[in-house]
Length: 143
Image (cartoon, rainbow, N blue to C red; front, side, top):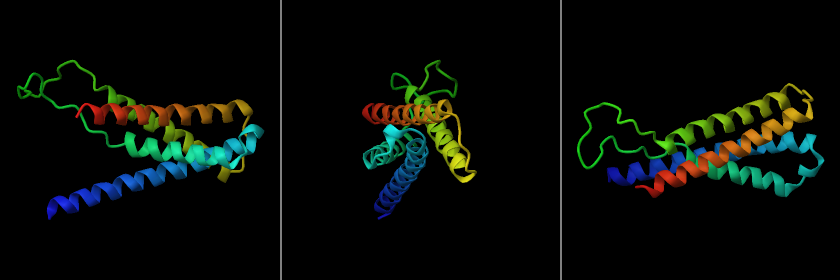
């Protein structure tokens, strides 16, 4: 019974993260679409929302690498290996959340940023969700 509750809670958590990612993607797409004429389509909005949903679903809360090597228990010391998915997830989440935060600030404060800033926000978002998606795929594949 407890296992079923834990699984349900985990699925709800993941769906909540996906919805937060989709909402973030919507804010970024709204900002970019109002500044760059080529990105004013509904397909672009949906693509950015879908990318955010997938990135946040897979990339946040990735399974960590075990703290033991060669079947032996770790003594608590760092073995010198970097957990690449964890690093990718952290940097990707930071970039994606930063881009979403910047988009919301620009929209709410009604600023008209230079075109270069808009491109930087979009590139930060795309790179961030790509890093999250790759991190989630790597972490789940190694289990």
